[in-house]
Image (cartoon, rainbow, N blue to C red; front, side):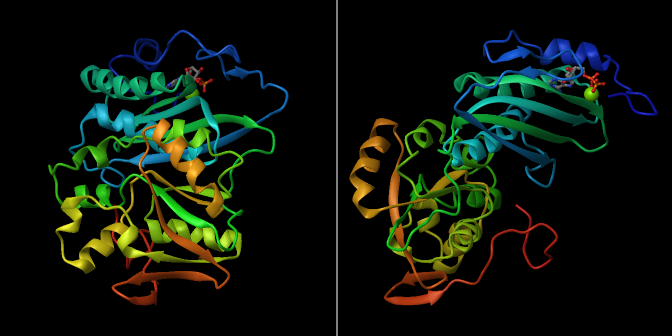
Length: 324
Ligand code: ADP
Ligand code: MG
């Protein structure tokens, strides 16, 4: 879309799109990809579509010195993670890119990060928008498919369910506070749990991905399900680098730190062995960290004491929390 002041790239907008973003269509459902006013997609009978969008703004959602490859990777990863969190299969994405200039080296690395991850999951870029802007900002819209009625919502948790997480929690928040640590990749190149999530339809009662901190995100799931939970602090999987920190700092990073893109789900206790088997098949670490209760709210059991957890994760426009 051209703006009133014109799109002031050295390379024009259309050359840029052709050079960096047009790829042959591989998904037969895509009847028309990049190049027209809209893409055309032919949905299949018996399927529903999940649709989500997420924006990354430089200096806000990633440090300003983040390399272009990681930015491309992460912009896609956070969206694929949302699709996975519904138990759906990611299929197509649209990319709205606002960049300060058309630096071909930066663009080549950015598109490589994005396409490397897209190819791993057979995801097709079918359109987008490209504008010049003083601030680097990337918005990706992702579309995924799931058998009708099978998407896993946040609202299905049942009293007595186990609360389960994948991977380790708090790594990305640690990396943000400790630049160039061994956990830097956890902040820069999150790996969406797409394959694992595919096996959870009909198994998980409720699920979401952890983007804004375990306590806040699990809080959403609990509220939408009308239940509460008690978490066992000692069961939450944390990296040795975090375990070496003073306890209050550990808890802050693990419960309120964002950007992990791990999954948090609830299952009936009898489904745990099945889940463990599927996790082993998909190389996914899983851990039971607590249980769903009829009493609402989130409590934390730590060193023999149970207390209500009231701290929140990161919230935009809230001056009492800090930005990731
Ligand atoms: P319009 O002005 O009709 O919105 P554009 O000129 O902005 O169309 O874009 C031309 C085509 O290129 C469209 O198919 C659009 O979806 C696609 N496109 C634009 N920018 C991107 C991008 N960054 N990545 C992928 N496709 C893009
Ligand atoms: Mg446009």
